[in-house]
Image (cartoon, rainbow, N blue to C red; front, side, top):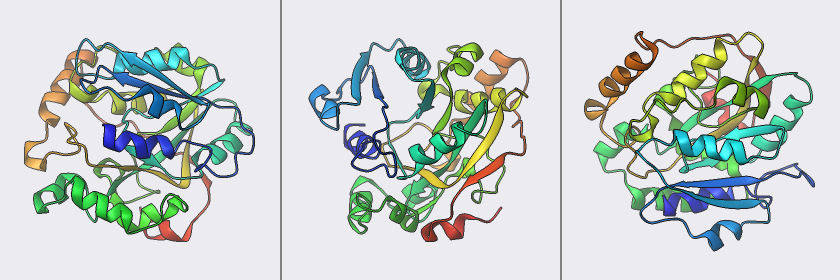
Length: 279
């Protein structure tokens, strides 16, 4: 994800994230055994907050690498982005900080968006690719106003119709490190490429924990870039869901079913995201 990671990392930098003042935070970039590894100098060039770890993967799943990054983290809270191809909106850090100051044990999660006029499982059959995406990103000044990304994006299939939908996962969430470690982090039994349903499993496990407060972060999102992902960038009729669900059943001894809890809604309403407020 060399092409995509550079934009993702910029969106986590102090040059892009808004209203964070002198916040002391770190960005741990875990390269999960890439044959074409990220350049450490490039990663650390985004700021002194950035740290690079090359993790020798033993399978195609990111779970072990994610847990390695979580264990390295020095902060009281961790933000987990399981996919390095997702550009963040500019208010995620500042709003997550506000929420963390109010709630004792929050699970703060964000909406998932895909760059392009349709979810990429659909748009790739219409010719959407990296070149089309580069032109699309060049059409808006997102580096100076990240909310412009809403204007060139569609809602991911797992995020249904928008902020008030019943989501089944989040690709960028924030929670206490101690709570995540006590849960066991990302379940390393999920060994499928991309982790299979591990991210949906994480969402379910949190919603089963009544000690945590699920909080939907309004007005913010992550924006998925095309990178040939095993689930996000294949046609719907070729999606590996049956294989992923089979792995889930073997691990949990039951069919997958989304566990839902009504969240607290916290955030704001940038003009660019109004059309995604439908349930």
